[in-house]
Length: 415
Image (tube, rainbow, N blue to C red; front, side, top):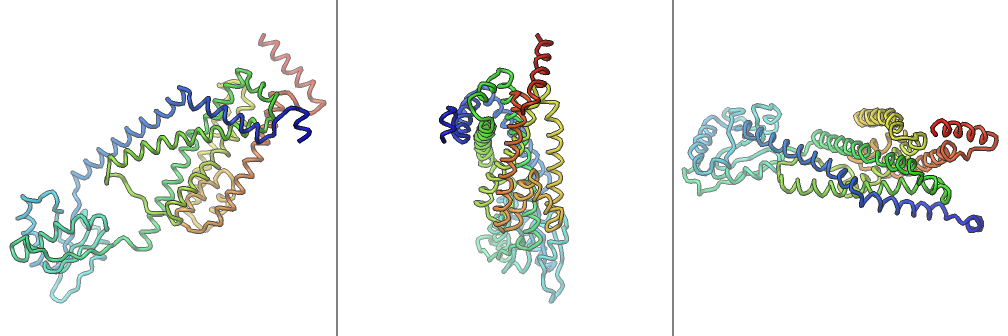
């Protein structure tokens, strides 16, 4: 504390807070950030509308069907009743298709009939008109339960007012289907994390290069430790990124409410949605800080925006390779490849977020997050020292004169 007071400098954390607050306000209220937010929103709206229109066209061209597993006489009676009621409640009635005609004494097997993938069958209707069983996905069978009861009443007595019971049986609780659904959730969360990190981490570069061009960074470095400058900029950009994600999430929520049931639903992750949300925030922060620290280091070596683009391209391509590495590791759980991807700092956030969707254990996440945080601190320290040596010309004694001479000759040529 005495050394700090004599030099007149703030502590690293206090100085980092000053830099973070300054950068956050400057970027958040700038016109360029507003335009940056509008780009993904407009793109998301276009893709959302296009997907919604395409889904409606697909639904109108390929209606879901109910497969009949019953005797030929009962199937004929149900089909005739449906045709008779079609003019009155046509839109609510699914199309019938005979999947299997039962022989006398044969017991129906709706699950086996569903596995045949005949036509576009979404559910199986079995039994007699007096006591039917509808087997399929819960969301779909609940919609069809009432209309099918009306059809059964029409087939049984000729009067749709008499409603025989239609029992519902879920066919979506198998271990294989649950694992497949969780793998889709893992893949979706991993892909979203990658695109958000890559999209938002570039702001760190542009901000640093702009301040280097205006000589602002040199003024800050003269008064504040360079570690604090780097930390402040990283966390300021992270906070700005959260503002952007919150804006896009709100717009996506409104789109989901407007689209209703047309939006795809993901299987609940193994850790549950609340914990999955917490881990998503933490792993995005770690992935952003890791990539942002690399970009800051690149920015320290690039004097112009053109040089930044040249130097950042290999880092971007390497990040794509890391994502492919993490995706391949996710498809091979429990192998050495998955362990290596979980240990490697840059792929660890992607692998561990996918693991949260398929495995409910929480202790591996604690270990991974601590390791990622330590790597972030090392990269920030390395980048700040590299910046000081290359730009601020404050390297070790003995090399200082050569550096000053080299930079003075460059400046003389430019002048």
